[in-house]
Length: 165
Image (tube, rainbow, N blue to C red):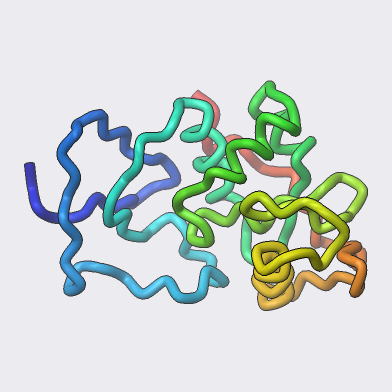
């Protein structure tokens, strides 16, 4: 097995069922200190964890949500023929955040929703505050109570066609 890290070069994750894990080299890693670019699908996964097939599908869909746009748990669940709670569970366990932008998924009623396990009135906890910071850095605005300030073009509900078989 190569000592190079895995690289995602398309909106599809490579599945690695091997128990060996690559060792990342700092020379090969791309700086992703800010996920606010539109180039979410070209980054190094230094140590790909084991994820379920469902998580794989959820994370692949997330890569299609443009910066500065949001979708809801319900819209994403509909595309995956699943439930909003199942989608939320996969997002809570997203090992690639924020490069795989789970922060771009909010509740259908415009509430900021949870982030990495935080789910209470906003802002609650460091994680949810981080989600608000990420979204606001992309131009998506919220009230102090964590409610989306609606504006034209902020909701993303596709196209998801790139992912269909």
